Length: 160
Image (cartoon, rainbow, N blue to C red; front, top):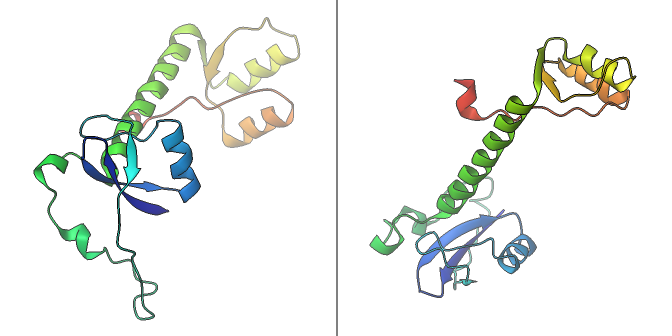
C-alpha cells in the first residue's frame, strides 16, 4: 500500500491510499479519484516528504508526525478514509440493490437449494430463478458438477 498526498484543481488537499503507484495511475486515468471536498476529478499528487525508516524503526508501524496534526478547516471532511467510505457506501448500496432484486424475483427454496439446483440442472425440473441455503460443502459439490451458484450478498448490517 502507498499513501499519496493529493490536491485538486481547486487547491483542496487530501490523502488517499492505493495498492500501488500503477493502481493510482489507472484510477486517476479512469477519473475514479475525486476530491472529497468538492468532487473534482482533476487530481494530482502533491509534494510529499519521503518517509524513511531507520534500522531501529523497522517492524514497527508508527504513524508519521504529520498524521498527528489536526486537519485544516477546508480539509476537515477529507482524509484517506473519506474516499474509501464514499466508495464503500456506493458498493454496499449496489450489493443491497442486487440482493433485493434477487429476493423479489426468485423463489426462496430454503434448505432445499442444492436439490432444487441439481434437479433443474439435470432437467428433472423446469428452470427458474431460485435462492436458498447451502453449506460450503454443498456449494462446492454443485460447482464441481458444473452447476453455477453464487452466494447472495450479505452486508454487515444484515448480521446484527
